Length: 187
Image (cartoon, rainbow, N blue to C red; front, side, top):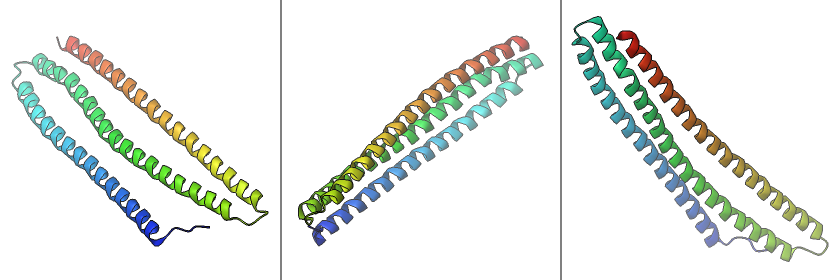
C-alpha cells in the first residue's frame, strides 16, 4: 500500500491553506460590500429624510402635510426592497463562491480517497476482496448521498430566490396600493 509521501502531504496542506485563505478573502470582500452598501444606504436615507421633513414642514395646510407624507411612502418602500435585493445579491454571490470552493475541495479529496482505496485494493492480501468491495460500496453510497444533498440544497436556494422575488413584487404592489389610498384620503 502506498502512503502519501512527505512531499504529497505538504502539498495537500499547502493547497488546503490556500483554499482557506481564498475563502477568507472572499468572506472579507462580501463583508466590505455589505458595509459599503449599508453606509451608502444610511447616507441616502438621511438625505431623503431631511428633504422629506423640509417638504412636510413647508406644507401650507394639513392636507399638504399628509400628501407630502403619502408621497414618501412608496419610494421609501421601493428603496427598502432594493436594499434587500442588494443584500441578497451580495450574500448569494459570496455563498456561491464558497459552494464552488467546497465542491472543488470535495472533488479533490474524493479523487485522493479513490486513489487510496484502489492502491489498498491492489496491495490487499488474498481473501480480502469482500472488505475492499464493502469499502468501495460505502464510498459509492457516500458519493450518492452527497450528490442528493447537494441537489436538494440547490433546489432550496432556487425556491428561496423565487419566494424572495415574489415577496418583493407583492410588497411593491401593496405599498403602491396603500400610497394611492393615502393620497386619495388626503385629497
